[in-house]
Length: 211
Image: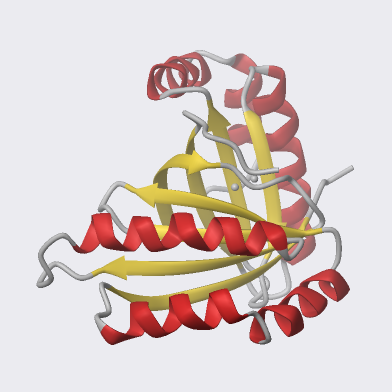
């Protein structure tokens, strides 16, 4: 939600689709929500993807901290006032997806992020472990080429692999170098020979600070 390091971070990631003509309202409310959540101790990421949807991610050191935060929000007068302020009968955005994520590898928080969502194949024995081993090898290669990778595992055991950069120009430069990288070519060839997951979605996200 991201120098790569082992981490026990956990996140709740929500995607919001704006109502027609109401993107500005959605972003305004996201900025207000972010201020409340950060004051309550959450780390918050907000970004806009290529379809104009908002990615709102709250991150915590562990699930116990996440649960404690949720309980605190239920009794927060500031949070209650936030919800009372917006018309729930005519919302400016609709929640279209929610993920609960464990993050063994954390990417840097930078201006832009590409997220590749993979569904792990249930019909292949050991698919998750094999895919995670490939993801870890990818982290080494991608880091050497200037990307900042992250690995996120959702509640269904699927993997969301992210790469962050300081600009889209850096992302393009990275991809050009990646196509010429012999280690990456060999890793892809090995993975594609016995696929253990299906790429189901790619998100290209501009970070939105709301400040």
